[in-house]
Image 1 (cartoon, chains in turn red, cyan):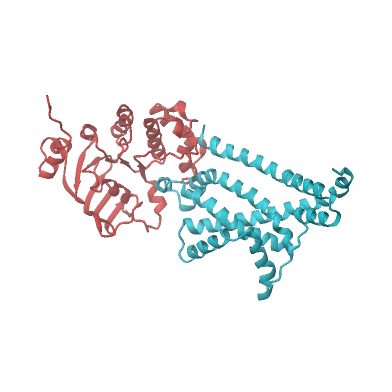
Image 2 (cartoon, rainbow over the protein chains, first blue to last red):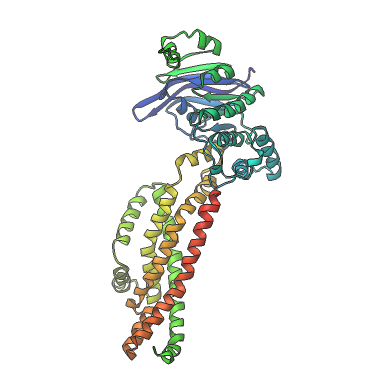
Length: 249
Length: 219
């Protein structure tokens, strides 16, 4: 668990004059699960988008296994294959069946044998409880089912690291669990993940390390028990308080 | 109704119908190519070309085909470009149809949310792979109804070809009316032949639309 696979150094992201990320640095080691927390609009999602070069960056560097990641990288598609991403809005391809959604990239991009990927896809679908949905189309699935398919689709590319961008934020509460259980299982297997979420108890259960971002900077980081029980900064305390309710009776 | 007259001149109409169909389809194929090109220029916002395409689309959509044909047929020879009636008709149809097709394709392309391409890129796809596997199939499904409407519209517009002395269906009908005053028979055959050409095209459009739109999206 010591090998650094993703390294972010002094990352700066601006939209015109608006600085979103202002000098973010951290390392991700193999098998590590990092949860990124912070108030909305603090740049968490932008951070994930920068990590697989969906956003050009204005300063700093990102390295994946020593290779520089930026939107001008020579082997950008090769790099992106090693970085899986799951979006808040699932983004399954609506014109393809569940199985084809999963197979398209491994078969067309990685040029793997269709039968081999199919066997793997079915096994993964089985594990997330959706094997019988292999021939369904996205519009026939619930939000939770779509998101589980999106996770399988990312996993089938065998990425080095998985980026999960508020993957339960668009789900009905009773569907959140079925998706998070899948992610918890991935963590047990030692999958390297970077997770943006607002589910604090999930964050606490899954994280090896919490990064708390505000104002474009990492304000506080540490083990989940420390961060949640003894936040050091006023900003983090204030953030955590917004999740608590006092009884009005 | 004089059936003898009709059976006598039916072969003449048949010949004209083939001409109408041939030039119409050729014009539509070219219009489709022009449309794809223009839609790509606008979708990718290619500088300079985008401005030219915009101007072309406005001119093409806001002037009648008849005037466009006159320009090509009588105007271009003045600057040394001489055309025969057939290529003039095809060029006119391509010029008019190109802009309508461009708008049909563009609306299809723009109906696909950009995050769909980002998802494709995140899976390691190149721009061309994302276009081919993810964007075009979805855009096509949205464009088909407008595309088929344009095809029908353009086939009907061929009726002004007679103005540049092409012996198409309209020309034949006007000719026969002028020669024999058999207005009813001549017009009945004209309408009949346009229906024979267009009804199958309409039916094809309906089938395509249903296939792409519903089967494609899984309902």
